[in-house]
Image (tube, rainbow, N blue to C red; front, side, top):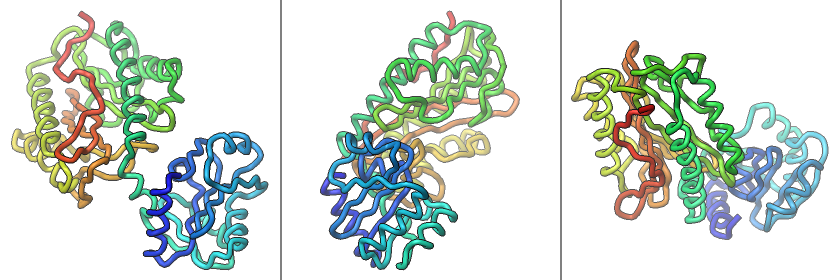
Length: 358
């Protein structure tokens, strides 16, 4: 944890009238302590930073975790957290309710004489603004994934199934150095591309199909996210050209609208209004974008309800989509970082309509 993050967290604790923060959530603990394992606990007080793990992770923690007292524990991790809160003299411990189950809450409380207080976003708000190092890690993850996209689409043949193509993406991510996919890869062909988050199936690729690919990898603890839509062999029909250009235009004007001070709702409306005016409003039913970092879906959100104000350093997706049941869909998604006067693309894959396999 950097001193600035530690200072900001402790200031948040003071405002929340808490004298400690506790977490057993892997994303939170990676952010605060640098630990990339799956099981750990972090306790922060005004004077202590304590890291707890079991025997499986002690050596890993000694290599990754700096600036913490590292203690090996056994048995129930939530129970040990409660005991350590008592040991540190904590009266009121903050936790993020979105990252703690009821069962784990009860286990901590059973072993802690003080009070547990839900404080929403006390850490996740800090995570929304990325450091230069975090931005470069996300950029590197995006570059790796885009290299896989370029190679696999160049070699795409008729007959490959959605499931096999998705598996090839995930194999290549790991082969090229990523720890894995940042979410289940989406590969959809033909009319099935109208499913915004459809699962790849056994549909074989055929000439004239739409090819929608939504994918990302996790590299050095950070995620990437990208969507590109292609045609295979030939343009499916005139409607596809129209929908593709409309989606690309919606994304372009949304990117131009991004700057510090804008709300997620305002940026979402730029793309949504254009699509609605063209008669496809009901076919764009999801938000325009979301934050990306340690998790594939973080704050801020770009949607019709988001009052979050964009700030320099936020990393977000911009992904308008139009989905026509029975015909197919188009989504175009990029990763960007908010800058002092706009945004910078972190993804570089071409976006002009491309016909694969010819």
